[in-house]
Image (tube, rainbow, N blue to C red; front, side):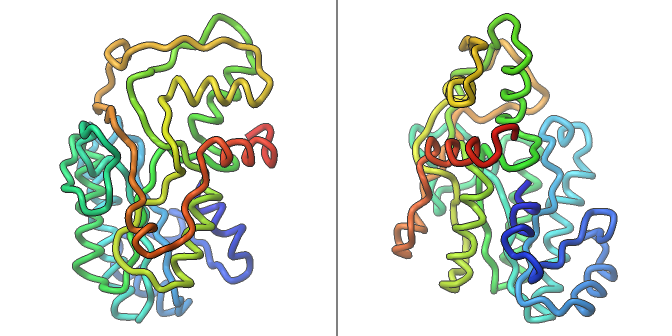
Length: 270
């Protein structure tokens, strides 16, 4: 989703390589791609993000989420390109009683989170000119995302949907992330920056907001995470504090409600 939105925003200035066109864990292929395209900025949106699948396919997760970013970072450094790397709130334990800021200690509790943290560490080690963007609860045009699932299920009608109410985070649109990324690049910011929309809600609260704003009549009922056990534990707290944006005196992220309204206006069917 984020890659598609970035390509739309950059237009003809972007060269987008799909997974079938470039394996970021193949050093020779990465070097050849950078030699041919000579980019000023490389944005790595590649990732194995199916958190439950990562638990049973840890080697695959670490190859894509850790080894690949390290190879890409080393190549960017050799070719003089800036690297923007997308990461996640899953690098944190998810049990803090406040939003996590960029300097909080990491402590992943899943294979996915551990592999993404290893990717961050590789980027920092191999490419000093980097920008690591942590985001969470992402949705964007075309999906797939929680927003798209709720729009589809809400349009079907039927009994109330049951959605967990004890996981809290910042619903975030790809558009908000893309616009903030462009501002960060223009300002030359380096390091780690949290990019999630302002404000917080639960998955239940988000589901109710989606259905209401989309004019869908299907009801939604709250439940506890324990009612839906999964192979990978979900963080109770996915909230990200945008301390780096404040310290750089940059424009804040939009409120999640405003970002959702914009998305549903521009993409009423997702």
